[in-house]
Image (cartoon, rainbow, N blue to C red; front, side):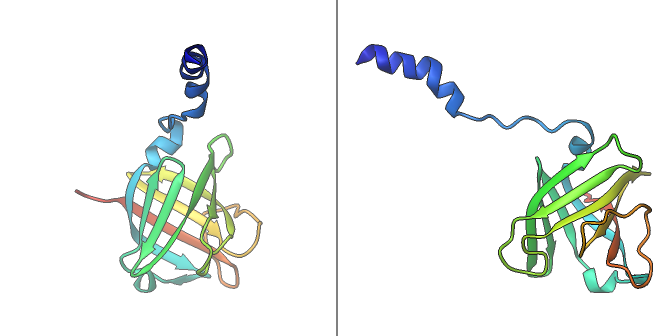
Length: 146
């Protein structure tokens, strides 16, 4: 019995424990809390509608909070694309984005994060814009000041 226990501790236990890898590349730059600076939806300014919205990234998980509403899920990046790709996959079982995957673009510039997402279809935006009569959302975030 003691040999089995020793075997389990030495060989099996390490495979059962998963140590979260430290994010690298652009995902590392996303880490932390971001505050909304501007919001454009379907060609119109919606900053007042999203006042107080924050985006928090922890590892490959995101949380969007605005007022009493939240959306959570995973974030995936492809920095090899030009412009760079982001995909948010909601894990929520309720709310406006429940179970939805939102393809988009992202860029870091002048200390700000710009994200353009398609909120309704799987078509990825091609530019950082949210023109009239489209389901595109363009957000600019500033890292939260502590």
